[in-house]
Image (cartoon, rainbow, N blue to C red; front, side, top):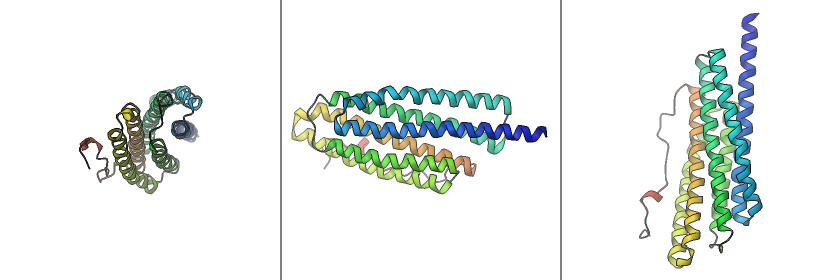
Length: 237
């Protein structure tokens, strides 16, 4: 009877942990969507709301940290249960960083709203953001369902984000070359695009953590990367 009680209590702990992660993930996804919309629509109020809401994600991460530390101390989990707790910590840390990047996009939106729009760059950022939002939804489903196939699919989709980032990088360089007055705004947009690309990397890290939780090992293949911006310069074709 005592063992049954311990198992039930531990299952309840894991359920609470999964709920916290789900809440964090939902907030992070909305933060990215709102940040991209604020940029596209030059909506200062929405951008400020994204900045303010980031504190909620930080608070949830602290709850996850406190909860997992208590579970480790009281339950002394082994094998699958230990992996579940380790993965929850990794997932929460990555979601917190996603929230930070969304906040950074919103902060730059406040500055960009005072400048003239640059071509279709904001719309390009929003398209890229929607791609990453789909990845966030997919990886949260994979985590909730323990679905390794979904997690691996999300991991592979990061390559598409890299390609979009490289394309947007070239687009912004073109705007700067065409008119030096665009340089300041384009510089902010380059940082925004990099923020979105980094969010994709953090989503991929979550996917790898899910793979580890289910399989007990990290994916064997190297993560595919197609971001060429680190080797590109103004002279690139």
